[in-house]
Image (cartoon, rainbow, N blue to C red; front, side, top):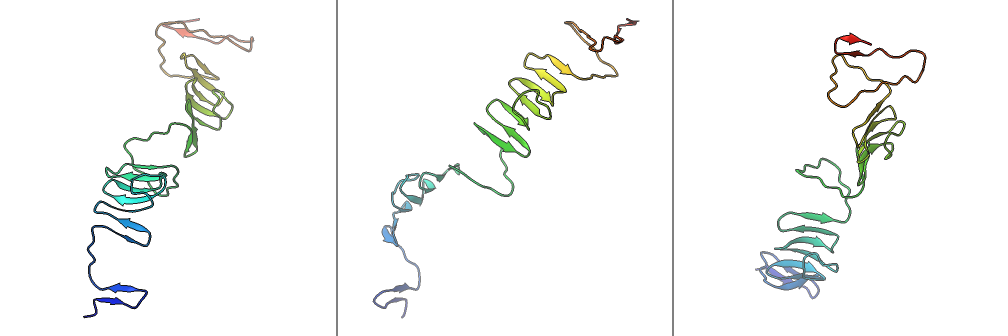
Length: 173
C-alpha cells in the first residue's frame, strides 16, 4: 500500500531499490561502479566511483589503495606525511626551494640579506659562507676553544695597520 507511486512524470519508491545495472540521471550503474561518461577509472572523459577508487576526469584520482593524485590543490589545515617530495619549485613558510637549493630572499649563494643552502654551499647573507669545497669565508670568527686539525690556517689583515695575534699551541706570535 503506497510504496510505489507514479504520477505520469515522477516515480516515487518508498523502500529499498536493488539493481545490479542501470542508469539514473546520466549516471550508469554496474555491479562494480557508478560512473558518468567513461566506465574506466581515471579516464579523461568521465567521473568514476567504484572498486578501483574514485576519479574526476584524469585530474583528481584516488585509487583503491588510497593513493591520491591531483593536478592542483589548495589545502587548508594540517598535512601529515611520512615523506614529502617536491620535484621542481615551491615555498615552505618563508623559505623557497628549487631543484638546486633551499633559500630565503635569493637563490644566489652569498647574497646580501639572503640565506642559502644548496649545491654551491651554505651562506647567511654575504657575511658567512661555506662553499661546496668546504672553504669558509666570514667577517668574524670567535671561539673559546677551537682546534684546527690538518691543512693550514692563514690569517691576512686587510687593514695593514696591525697584524692580528694568533696563539698556536703554547706560544704567542
